[in-house]
Structures are given as C-alpha cells and as structure tokens.
Length: 640
Image 1 (cartoon, rainbow, N blue to C red):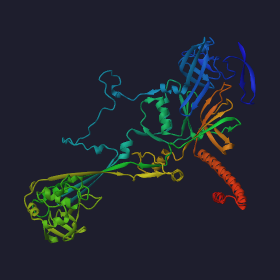
Image 2: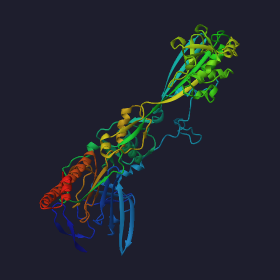
Image 3: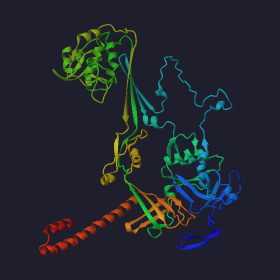
C-alpha cells in the first residue's frame, strides 16, 4: 500500500510530499545487516524512521537504536543478537533484539553498540606457571615463587636485615672509638613515596598501553594515536580485558578522547579532536531550545594536601673489649657506661618517662629522667628533677670527674639541666626537644658544677660483671617519620574571592616528594567554578560532528561563545525528531555565561533606576504643590 509521507527538508525549511512505503527510509545511506556467521549484507528497508537514532557520548556511549517492521525480508530475518549492522560507514553489533507481536503486526526493537566495544573480547592473562615447568601438567611450579637466600656469612643466628634488600633504603654508617669502646651508628633512610606507590609501577607511553592489548589480536583491531601525550606511571600491565585498557587510558590521560573508526582505535588529544568546522547554532534561527544548567553542587576551591614521607631509623651498636673495658674510675665503670649508652637515640621528651617517673624510658626522656633512669638501673633511687637531685651528691672538682658523676647547669638550688659523665672527657645526656640522647665532649658544653653520688662511685670502683678480659656489647635503635614537605592548603584565590571557601576532601597521596608537583595535581582535583552544561535542540535532523567547535549565539541573553560537541542524539530519518546535542563547558564558556548574566543584571538595575528617576521627577512636581515629601526623599536616596 502506497501513501504520502511528509518530511521536513533540513536545507530549505519546506515540507515535501514524497511517496514512500510505510517505514521505508528515503535515503541513500541505508542501514545494512549481516547475519551471524554469514558473509553477505542486505539493506534493511523496514525501519520506522522516527524510531531510528544514533546515540554518542565522548568516551562513554556509541550505539544505534530502532524498531523494525516484519516485511518478510531476508534482511529482517537476520536481526538477531551479535549480527552486524552497517550505518554511516561504521559497524555496530546487535546486543539487544526484542521481537514483539501486537495487532497482527510483528516488530523487533534493536539496540546495537559500536564495534569498538568488542574490545572486551580481547583479554590478557598474567603468567601463572614458571617457564621451566611450561610443559608439565601436574606439580607445576608457581611463577615467581622461588626465593633465593644469598646469606653466605655462615651465621646461623637467623637475623634478617631486610633493609639490605630494600631498593628504597639509603644506609650510612659512622664508627667512633674512645679507648676500648667502639660505637657504630647506622642511619637508614627509607623513601616511603616509592615504598607506597612504586610497587609494580612503571612509566608508560600511551602507545605502550594500546600495544600491550591490541598487538597480535585475532579480531582485526588496530590503533592510532593522534596528538601528544606525556608519559604516566601505571601499575605494571599484566592481565585484563580491552575494556580495562580503555579505562586505564582515560584515567591516566584525562584529556584523551577515544573515537574509533570501526576497529581502528583512534586516541585523540583534545586539541586534535576539538575542531572548528564553521557550524553555528543561533537561538530561534536553527534551534528551538537552549538549556543551560549551572550547577554549584560540586564547587570546591581549596584542598589540604598531604604528600609523601620518609623514615629515619638510627641504630647504635656499642662494643667494649679488653682490660681497659671500664671507663674512668674503676673496674665497674664499663657496666655504667654500657647501661647509659643503651639509651642513645632515645628522643628528648620534656616531662617524659624514665627513672623515678616510671614508664618506658625508650618512649622518650628528658635530661633529669635520663640520669635518674641510669641510676635506677644500677639500683640507686634518685628523683627525676634537677633541683631535687642536687642533694643526692657532693660537689667535686672538674679534674676529679669520673664515670657516673652528675654535671649540673645553672645555680645551686636553681639548676635547669643535667648530664652524666662517661669518663673524664665525655658526657652523655638528653640535649633538648627535637634531639635525642647523645654523647658529647664535656669541654664543648661544660656544666656549671659536678657532683658525685657515693653509691654510684662504689659501683664504678667495683668489679665489672663482664670481667677485665671480655667483650661487652649493647644496641639501641630509634625510628621516626618525616614529611618531604609540610602538609599545605592549596587554594584557588579567585574562586574563594567570588564564592567563599568550599573545601574538598583532603588529598593524602604518598607518591609526591615535591610540593610544586603536588600543587599542580591538586589544581586538577578541585572544581573552582560551578559546572556548566548545555543541551541544544535544533529544528532539523542535521548530522552532528563529534568534537565540532560550534559557535553559539543567544542574543536575548547576550551569550556568544564556542563549545564542542561531546554528545548527541541524531535522528537521520525522522521528520519529527530533531537532532539534540550536548556541548562541553570550559573556563571560557563559564566566563561568557557569567558575562551574559552580568549584562542581564546591569540591564535590570538600569531599568529600575530609570523607573525610579521617573518617579522622583513625578514626586518632585507633586512636592511643589504639597505632595508626599517622605516618598520623594526615599526615591531620591534609592536612586542616588
């Protein structure tokens, strides 16, 4: 049955009367179908023209949808899941086919996605089997499970110095000797930025990612990179699907646009994808609606940034040997010296633990609790406050100083600091906040006076537990963490000035050891301006171009700007469904929009002022003949 079907001509705006069969598409660009497992393609002449549309959104969607009428054709019979459709030079794969029978009319609703989504069929698998066992079927060695023990020292102690194998650790050693006492200090600095984030992290070019998945595939996919991209650090490429590949690309390179040509996966930089093709959209000339959405829900303009850390571990090993193992004063001096040196590296904490105060001395001590702790270790109880400690000794001359003597700083009855002698030339003490227990030459920081406790002197003069011909050893260690740079607040001052402070969730990222680099990263993670989006509905079913930089004109709102097509719904065969496009927003678009709102506000204010001025003039005339003076005064102040 033949009937007249009315279609609107997008070029001239006139309505044409064209004889067509119901559902027949009047176009040379017909949809063609190829059945599953077949080689021939057939034109599909039974599509409802108002139902057919192309849906595209950058890096997200690309599909065609339509309803077809059963015309008993071979083409209609091939509309089934996984069949191929060809339209506008691109291939689509049917993913949903829903037949329907109603009113003695058989139809089928079809949704087909672009063929590039078949990338999900490409899958890479990680290595599971050790290459040496590649041909075995049972008792197969797991890949990477072999661990080698390279300790050839013959030491069966079982000690494991894992820092020797840590590539992120830097170790320095210093050794000092005083008499028969040797002190070895080992400082290990571990870069936690690499420890936290560089495990399995590799520097990749965008081509490397594409090559990993696409090279050698059996589905006919190829790739092309258009534009320049920097390298990015990614977890080492291993297993996953082609869909994972696309996700990695768009996450690691946010400015990438994936816009394939059939199975040729083309990745564009934005400056290569967004192009001006000379198109223009004018309100009421070739569009029916401009829908602007200005959304400040996600507005953020400041964020706390916490970067990477490193740790410092200090280990002090002290060894005293030979007949002169004791310090100055007697054979028992080494016992006191070794006990005191076990606290080397313990941080200074004012009012901290130790000695008469109790608690764990290794958690931190101050000068008085340290001396009190050493005395306590020797079985001598003295206070942990310098002034209170003064009566527990008798004053001696500087030349008499020996192991265990106490050195006070300040005045008698008003001392403020204390140390303890290791021998006549060296003292040990907790210096000040920010430092740790250390040894130092007495003459480099001499106390005001010295005191000797008789109980301590007796221990120093007695026999050493270790004997004169043996070796005594002690070890202590401390560990602290440091930030490479102090946590800071990144602020967009221009946005804050305009909208006030809108803090984002803190960024705590251990990858950063440079403040400027993290600052640049933080800039990309805030949204200093409200989001602006624009949807345009046109008069006609014109064919949109992905990435087209379209010139936008809305004279009534004083808007004149350029925006790129990042999505569209295109009805190529419909006389009633016009094309709608989604346009992107950038900082310049937002400025253009804000300018238009400012112009509108200025016009409104000027209109109010003009109306008020007219009222003033009218009131002035009324005032001359006894009008309302209060109204006249208010209007004059308002306009002024």
